[in-house]
Length: 504
Image (tube, rainbow, N blue to C red; front, side, top):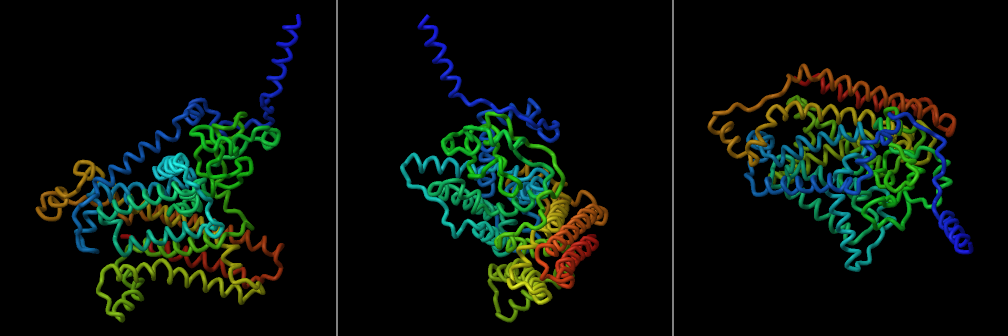
């Protein structure tokens, strides 16, 4: 009898120590929680997810580097260079498939690419290796937690495109990938908590901005369940070093996530939650283009850069492009520069910094003059986020145009990965016809035109909502000042729409 009572007390003690799953008060329909679909949940909950996807991407990463290594280099800007970039598997895979697809994936699913990214796996392994070797890994200094490193990295990549043509020369594209892999490994080795992914990755800010528009989100289902949870496994530091069911590797607090901008969708919080209280499902488009949210200065700088990049990329008419490039051509002529790399640098400086900077800063100055706000940066911080729908619509349109120009000959890089034999057949021997466009640009342009027009309208609506919000919270601003961001949106939208209409 005593033994039975003792056993009962022991079982009672064990039972009280276990975490009791709080009852979930909210049940979402399946489309608001796709993880309720048994097949999807079983995939996400698997211990090898997403590592198998990342390992596959890493193998492809190495393959792309090996194919691009030591391939022919043609004169920069020549017809041969422009043709060869579509025929070599490395440049075709990076700039024709991956880069364009990533824009659409970010717009529709958010930062889903981060699930597959081989650089995250490299940084993850490097961090574990450094920890195993006893390296005293550090946190990122506070100075660099504002996103400035990501913006700088993106700017460097764009300058490498304009100066060294890493988007056209396979060998340099391979060097670009090697540099990214080396950076991810070295940073992961000496720093902890996803330093590379969160604060250095060149596409991090782009994905963060475009993910705001996504019609999908990862959120907690019932806040009360999270409040009653005893273990907080989704953000626990005790499980950070685990491979599976980890506390958030990015040090986010999953129950408090209210925007797509920072979550990498690694699904570790989904695995770790003992109550199945985290959902991934459908929501409204552009939900995170939040009225009243102050944009960090780094985000504003990024939008300045992307404004210039898209302005240049949307121009397909040769005469208009020559007119756009008159200032850097004049500067090159005045300085007597003959080095092609420096010519590319001047072009990039105009396209990425001077031209878009003049638009944004002149509007910021005009806003300050017309209002009584003391800070010059007020315009950038209050209105930057509202321009994201317009800019992402232009980027989606450019991706469509690139697919149209590249994908008709998609079989060529797979049949001849180096592209040399195919290039000779087309350019030298004339025994093969160069693949053209899938459809004529005069036909295609109506779809990008609709996309950009929609993005422009949404940005104007968001700007108008921001003006209404500022009228209540900051009565110092005037109607004339409020017209400045509306005018800028109309200007950018008109430029993009005009250039699309000139596609022929």
